[in-house]
Image (cartoon, rainbow over all chains, first blue to last red; front, top):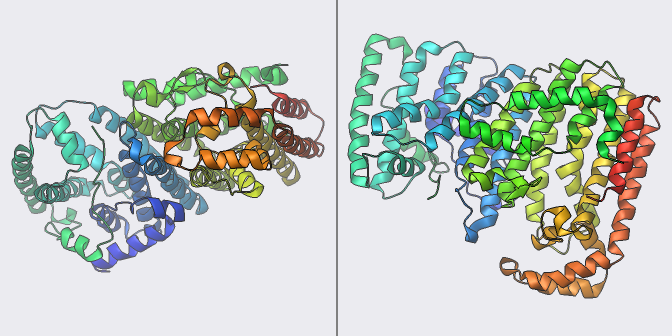
Length: 260
Length: 323
């Protein structure tokens, strides 16, 4: 399968699985992080039930991302949408469990539950922490961003790939954030940085810092590629944004998140 | 009679489950730990664990295994309550501030997800695939029930069947699953499992109907919220469905709900009062009684052991509860 085939295949699979008429009517389509989808597929494709592993991990990711959209306090004008967002996240979690229970995959149910558990613990500390600079912020952000994939990577005994994979995921995410910033769109990530990183006060500082970090991260990726060629499961310069435009249906990452 | 008196012989086992609940929700992260234990400390009837324990008494009663099922079900119930309080914007639950009130919506969302994950981690100790399939299906239905509730808000054209299907999903299935999973984990025979499932289902239906009646008949002090709160939020429950058979009440409700974005509570107070004094309450109670009778009938198929008497007493208590 080409990368675009992979994206389309899982996109359709997940869309069909989470189809719920009332949620479809009132909520935007859930965002699917295609960089994580491709990574997961590359990591598990040699396993017998690889589709199930990718599908259910993505469902958990979607569920948690959906819950991240809930604002600190409900806004009066859009209560129904916010109420349904809570339930949509619960619904996607329920589907993950339902699919794996149907195939008696208790080990993977437990693995993803461990992932949710660790991720919520990490998130709650992270959201309410102050950071001196973006470096410190990104260390914790990367951990949260890659938590589920890290769990799956251990599950399929491919932990050697983690340094490359997690750095690649962070690079894609930062590229995306830069694009959104240039478009003038405020994302969950931007809001978190501006609220929690003391040294960054405005969009210009944010763009400059993210750009600097991307250069550094790309250097790190080159280093890993030089030292361990076999760990490169996905091409470094894969143009995901082109895919995202092609598939159109999906945004790559969360567009909304914690409100003021 | 107090509810707990109906199963005093479970006291020691319930206390172990209480310890297990506390142990399970432990989190290294202080905010998450405090938020997770907030609802736990507020107490509660622990009905689901009680049903698991009592159902297990009809088979091989292995407390170590049963404990996992009982505490997992209570945790799933708790996780859904934490998220429900965000949905309903509730500040008080069981007389204590809700997680969303004490912290905020974001903490409540993460806490609910955390408790849910803990429940699943614990439940995976049970290696019976059918138990997982039942629980997974129940959880899906529970959420669909909540979605349906939002869908049906302020809809005066819904019928009895829609209401019953909604409360089945929202309440009855988790109670019937508690009974069924208790039976499965104790390896009872199929007939016993089926009878216990049916008992739980009928009990759950009756429980929710009584809850919906009490929303009109209990005092604000007893409820911890104003009487008629469900209707104020647009939830059309069984007493309302029956009350709307009176065309005056229906007309008043239609007027009050004309602009759902701007309901005037002052307009609602006399309607709520009329419903609470109408024969709709007795009619709704009649439906609850029918479910209770079916619950008793299901028990008649079970052997005469102490747990059976306790299940009957619980049914009696639920049917007559004042709050």
